[in-house]
Image (cartoon, rainbow, N blue to C red):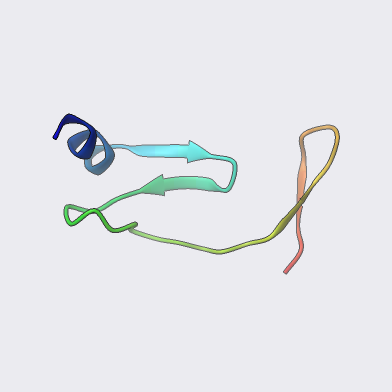
Length: 47
């Protein structure tokens, strides 16, 4: 239960952007983007 509560009460920064879940455990927003990653750590959207 502690993991589920933590997921529902926080947003998390990920390589694809912030992720947050609602009380049902569903993502509150989701944008699918394909990136090209560069050796300097930057990224360029490809779609």
